[in-house]
Length: 467
Ligand SMILES: *Cc1c(COP(=O)(O)O)cnc(C)c1O
Image (cartoon, rainbow, N blue to C red; front, side, top):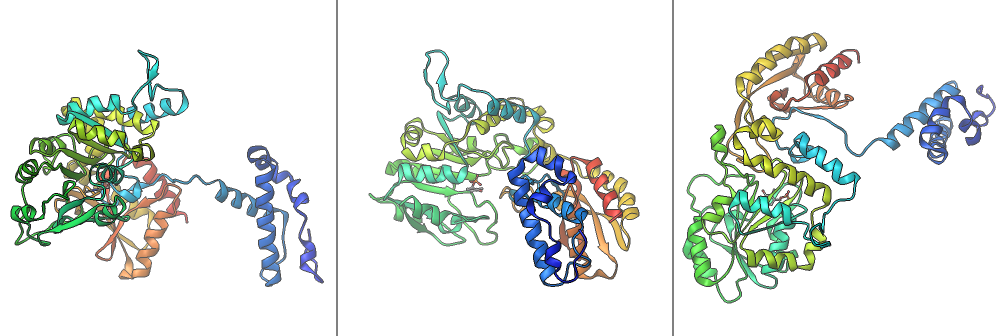
């Protein structure tokens, strides 16, 4: 293929000709003719465009066309998810996939995914079974509830509760709890979708039991208390205690529902962490139903869990919406592997990655940062590298005002230009194993609390040095 001076377009080979090139033989064997043909068509069209604009230099060479086709195939075949290193300082990061599962859960997922399982089949009677039944046993044991059911995520759990118990009825909620959680979970919108009439009670900063008393009436479907996950109302505030609200609801004969959001199954204080309300506590305080996520503090797969009164859970299970919101078998397997770990809270931090990250001590993280800092300094030119204390967030709305003391590698480009800093962050994100940090105080911060692959980080650093 030599460039033709009269018409560079004439130098473009046919699709068939390119398909027959030795350099693409392996690609055809691996991915099949149709996909490779598509990639060739794309590459040749792009080449035609560049030639028309006079931007193709000396014209196409075989090697250049093959390289372009292979690059396009790689893009086409890239999996939807790329593994990354989460050095953002947020442990349960919604945008990075939340809780990491223990190996036992991952094994259970593979087993459930690759063979037939008794998901809704009772091996004793040979009849249809209930997909929740085995999870239900563990959830009741761990929360003290009489019944439980599990759906796709906590947003689905809240939707199912509202739709099952309060359709076309009123739901009083404190104005201070009308939350939006990142990614468009807005309580008022979910209420509207469930055909509930939201009744705002009290004010943003102060809500009293009398406000609820005035709001309760014959049209009330349930009363909902929402854990204000991702923010804190501080200062001159008042919220109604759960046991008080529960008593009021009981007197009026309406269910009292608590949406805990994060919900952990152990008291985190036993690990020296800040206390986060548990479903068991909410039930003890008188909640009739409690909803929470499977993949936040619980450290399991994406799931929405509802625990509480048997008659109410039975209504949820009968709702046709349950079918649309149900948990799948792979997540069922994962949750089934995580819940029993809570039977032995002493060993939980070593078995549950999310809790392992949370309980990592600052001195351990700082020692790792000091060890890695010279490697970073050697690999990066014109970047000042230091180690500094920082604060990790638990994330996903848990304990938004309570940070965990941690340590970070702090990378500061010489001259402190914003562009150089953004460029540096982008270089780390473009690695084969992308590294996600956070930009703060004109520097790139890598909080090492969640670093679970030091060799991977160092390998990336090496390739960065040669870029
Ligand atoms: C996170 C959260 C939800 C949504 O849970 P998902 O599992 O993400 O669907 C709902 N309510 C509260 C209070 C939350 O914190």
